Image (cartoon, rainbow, N blue to C red; front, side, top):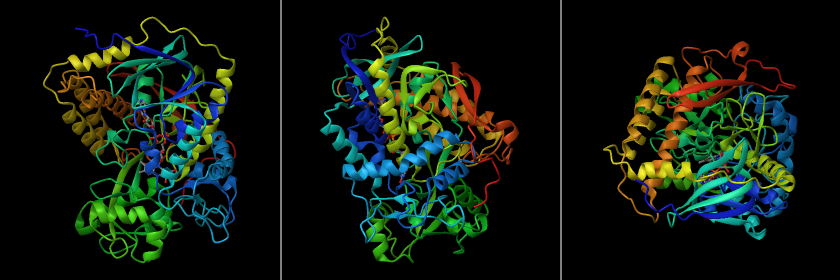
Length: 584
Ligand SMILES: Cc1cc2nc3c(=O)[nH]c(=O)nc-3n(C[C@H](O)[C@H](O)[C@H](O)COP(=O)(O)OP(=O)(O)OC[C@H]3O[C@@H](n4cnc5c(N)ncnc54)[C@H](O)[C@@H]3O)c2cc1C
């Protein structure tokens, strides 16, 4: 059945390849390129990466407007994580955040400024003055286009450095033998040809996987390719049960309304006009951490206090005034006018929670080297950075603005560590038939002639994940989702696609991405079933309490067979902050 389309495979050699051209991939490539020959492979044109859609800001305790300290940022991050974050990794993040932002400034990033010319800062959920408990202005921003500016700035620097880009190449497989990584196999979207990138080191910076859910702020391309590839190679995924729902997605559409709207003073209201967050987080109200606010919105909706009794609430900005909205939130104002036909200057915005951020991912140590077990055994030459990785600085719940700073700070660290590695490592030989498994997967889809449609399977997967494995979870709901996913994986074997051609065959690639989403949705569901407690974004109605005695540990889930998984665990690194009850 094999056709000849994959018989001519080009081989490229580099010291290191970075998969992904978002903030994490570009940072890693920039800093690794001082040590050797680096290529960036991206299925998207680099500046279309999801980092470019980030709106609200990047956290760093610069203290430009309010007193602030990196230790306060550390504490807030650990508390926000519901004490699951590794505190050594958090300290590195928050300490290096300040330099990371200054570096971006020096690269030319056009931050908003204070009247005296410093980088302006705004409030964001969960970021506080540790003495008073009041919100602190810690998020640096470029209007509500912070990610766009970061991505453009880093891309310009990468071009200046002469880094080699393979745009619109989709990585399908990782080449690994004897626990040593030897490169990747990529599909050139334009021509339908396969390429082998033979390298001493590989860095996965492939972003998130919000597309396992029906309502999400994530781009269509966020399909968890990196983690799914690693999982199929027998490597574990960490803390997959923790997926963040952002409280304010546009009603029905899921498009993000940045938390900066609340940072600038926006208020959540129910059908009676009540500021309901006063009840759930008396101290910092609308600026509580995202898990807390998302649950509060659902509680209001459940108790019939959604707008008109429906499944949404209002984000009220009408008291902020035209100038604040137009100057600091111009894109949000634009989105509201375009997609909802409302003007946030005079009308409240209908919102509900939207699937937003993966706290879990490919487990890495503090040097961003991928690990294969609970003893932190590294995989030689394999690194991961950004949302796709789990280091873990976000634990069970990420604070807003802490992802962009992770890209800049750990992205750089990842580049440097990979650079040091390639300086001394040698290029290990490729195994026999290095592209074999990639070809098997692609041909499997091309030649399959059943009557199942990938689009239908994707729809059913997104629906069951949204209904059964989102903000509130129970054993029963998740068992049902698990069975449904097993059925969908079975049906996936009988799909057929219409386009059998070579050029821009998005039918083929979307079907392959669906296989990733199904695996990732499965890993998420079984990990959530396994964790019998509530912590951060993982909220179980049948186990409503956090259980530090049994569950103050990271989950590692391995794929052992078709519908078989194995769990292992990793201790949480605790330094200064002992777990205690979270009060906002
Ligand atoms: C709407 C929105 C707003 C946000 N706002 C903020 C904010 O204000 N502050 C904050 O801190 N965080 C924010 N976040 C989160 C943050 O933006 C993301 O977590 C972060 O940008 C992820 O960056 P990344 O580099 O890890 O991945 P991405 O930017 O998603 O890039 C992934 C890259 O991987 C490539 N890729 C993926 N699979 C493959 C493959 N198989 N082969 C080749 N290439 C591949 C893609 O082409 C892409 O270049 C926001 C997220 C969203 C969705």
